[in-house]
Length: 372
Image (cartoon, rainbow, N blue to C red; front, top):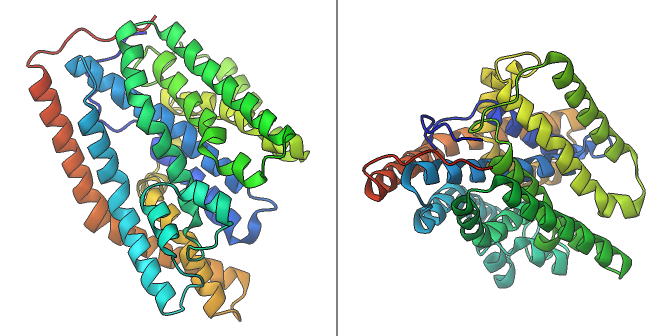
């Protein structure tokens, strides 16, 4: 499996924005009161798998271009991607809560927990007390950021080894360990909040994405030869597995194996969506509406529930349809402003950082990484 070094790390990978759009729509409509039919938790798991795949792909591309991974630049790019919109949403939410437009207030501990990406364990311990209504969605950001504190050095070691099969086996073993830990916690009185929001209990989804990024990467490695019958069979099987995980409501399964099984079913769908992006039924993921929603999905995710609670609490006479429509309009307006004035300038800076690292690290392009 050889990296195509002609594809820079900054080049857009097809279908990813469309997949982000699906994930954020699942979360949005679940929070809008349709959680009994819309699996919002599945949307978060999709984000996790996608994040692991994308970050690993970027690291592989950088390693192919420079022969290493610059940790300083990696963390600076992550900061520029996540922190500016988060600071704006936190500041606006704090202002709204001080004027009682949004219920709840930041305590000092709650504010620091959110700012330092400890929101998941704060929510686990305090049951959303100490933060304004709607800001609790930051728990998933904390899971990702905790994971990326230790993953880059491990990824660099695996890239240097050049052994994709062994790297995939190592990450798969870590996935199994997380699953076993969830079972242990469930059997020994672990809380549902910990099992669903803890970094130690949810990183297996990100690890599944990392396995695909290292071992069977549809963007960097030679994709399997297209076979319409096989692809359809894989896609249908994965969708049926996902439906089965949602239909099986047993508490033990729901809090333990479900997350791992869902992640394993999501990964092949992402593979097909990227590898067959120009073919049906995946082309629609690259349509303009889906790409746009995916582009602003982070701002939508951060702001939508705060806006939703604000509307429901201040205009209780509105029906569900009107409240949801107004929430969608205001959320999209916030996301568009964020895209124009915050995310797009930060994206340009991230690309500039990547180009500087590539030039400074190596004036010649090394041989592509061959992971076997």
